[in-house]
Every structure is written in structure tokens, then in C-alpha cells.
Length: 213
Image 1 (tube, rainbow, N blue to C red):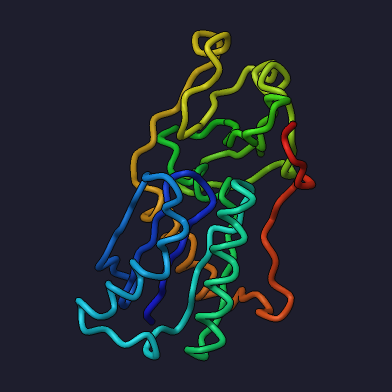
Image 2 (cartoon, rainbow, N blue to C red):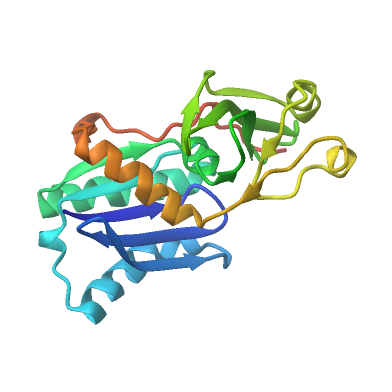
């Protein structure tokens, strides 16, 4: 089983390639507008490593919430690749991928991603880890950090929290890269045959797009 993993949901763009449950390639770029280069970088990987895109069995996409532009780019590329290569599509929440990276014992915690809105809101969900497995125990929501921190549970975030909350909440360590966490979840979904209908696939925005004034 060969899986192409794509994440353009944040300012840092990543992709990876896995063969037979083994991650053989990882790429990460945090340069400005890096989502625009994802097709070029993936094409370069296939040419350099002598891999055929047609031998890809599934594309796994980090589907949001996150950057509106990045999510659209990732979704368009993933769907186009699947149509061209005749492979399946898996969509995984960016919050689930982040939560799966948490280095915590069996306890509740919240995974948070900044909405990058002027309102200072965060996308979040609450999880629990047991026997090394991460389980989501709430819906996906949007709230201010003061409301999330009021739950008095550890927080998992890839970016720094607002200064006023940096000393008020426990921040969990991240014990692996996002693409490694993404790979773990993708394997489970592929094995369970949890695929997305390509013709109806859309990014998980969670919020309506508004233009900043």
C-alpha cells in the first residue's frame, strides 16, 4: 500500500510518502506561499526517487481546519491527483493529527489551532489518550483562548499561545512530526476502508471566509 500524505492547512506545508506502512520520504517548508509549490515539490519527489504516481493507492489529506487558501490548494491538488492516478482519498482533521502528537498520559487535553482571525479565536477539540491511542471526546469547536483555558486541561498547540495565557495552561510536548502522526492515522483509515467520495470532497473550514478590513 503506497500512500501520499499532504498537509497545506498551515503556514508550514508538508508532504510524505509511505510504502507498505513505512514512511520513506518527508518534506516540510515554512517559506511564504509554500502551499503554491506543493505540486512542484511532489512532482520533483516522484522524478528524483523514480517512483510512479500511478502506483499510489491512496492520498491522505490534512483537511482542516486551518488556512483557507492552503486548504483549497491542498484539496484541489489531492482530488486532481486521485482522479489522474485512479487512487482513493482519505481526509483527516488537522486537529486529530495534532492531538495524536501529544506526549501525555491518559488524561483529557485540548488540541488548538489558531484561526488567524482578528477576533483571536481558536479551533479546538478535546481528546483523551489511553493505551497510547488518542480518542476525540468532543465535537470540533471555535472559541476564544480564555474559554478554552477555563477548562483547566493541558493544551496541545504547534504555535505559541497568546502571551497572557502562556503561564496559565499546561502545554503538552509533541513527540513526533505532523507527517508521522498523519501517517499513523492514515494507515488506520485506509485499513478500515474509510475513504472520501472525491466528487463531494471539500475542505473542513469550520468558519465562513471573511475579508479582513
